Length: 40
Image (cartoon, rainbow, N blue to C red; front, side):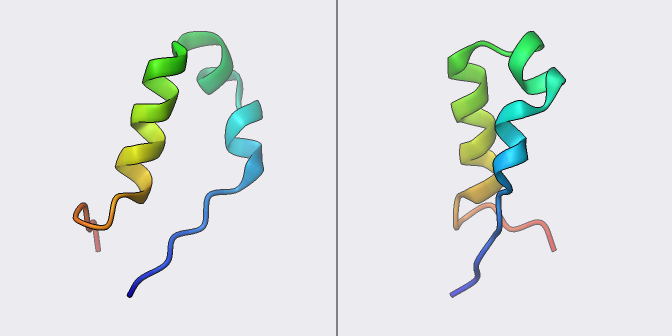
């Protein structure tokens, strides 16, 4: 099993906070962490 680290600063990033809706943020987080989406 692979692990991905998502730093808590993700939520404080100006692009994330100002330009994305809550749904966009959660979808982006999903794309970063979903086990079937592997970008090696």
